[in-house]
Length: 112
Image (cartoon, rainbow, N blue to C red; front, side, top):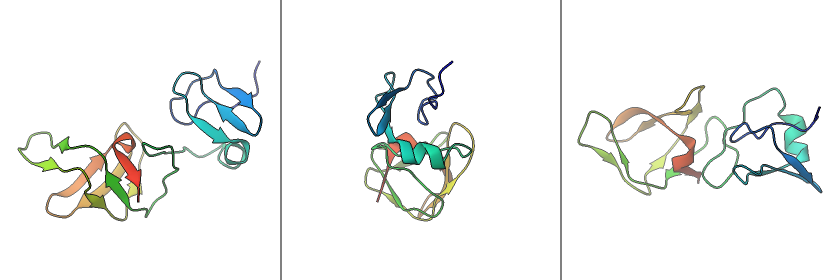
């Protein structure tokens, strides 16, 4: 049985030790051992670049996102302030100026 932690990004069990880092061979995500030890019980949400997100952060949208059921679009470069992390497929709860309350996937944003 392996005692290595699962990948925080994709949940893969096939992580391996690479010096002071853990690496996931399935999604190529890398994270430090210190981060893994301090966040064993919490869910880690990362942006498109692998930066860890927290409640209250400001993020920038990196791709045009169509809003389901509407003809509106969230444009690239839109800044979203004061995000809140939630459980589920869409793991960011936020309010976008001119659009309103929305849920976003962390893979389509980067930390500002």
